Image (cartoon, rainbow over all chains, first blue to last red; front, side, top):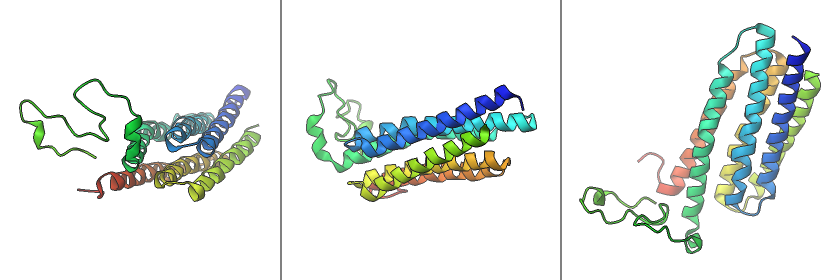
Length: 133
Length: 89
């Protein structure tokens, strides 16, 4: 393994560790949940992405073949992090209905999706759906 | 050089797991704890990958992938339970 590849792997591991640590510090230090979501969803995902990139380069260095496992894991994590953050934020809003008063008006017939149901439909197709909560 | 970087990575990610545990124990609301467990799963994946680099083996990638899937599914199932009162309707 060349020196340059080794240096790149070491830098990626250190950067990944720093980003994971920053995300968890953000999780501890932020005042409420909607701001706490920023640390884990962005910084920690980037941190584990750095560790995965380092692992991919390392096994490319010692085996000579590029493995697909790391790409699979990192794509899965990068796809699922926003979805789980969205679900957590929605469940948090669902538990704190009093936050509805702080929201600005949407300016259209659809209200805020977590708090308000679907508007009255003109063609009658959507009226059978229950307001999602 | 990689050994030193791995030591640094272990220490940083382990401190991150400890901070997540603190948030899990302390966390004022229920969703704080769910978020702490979700973050902890991601940090454990990073630990598994660093261990795989240190052991020079690729057998831990399946474990990391399983952790990623179960962490995501459990988070979504719990949020679904809070939102709808049921996991599968």
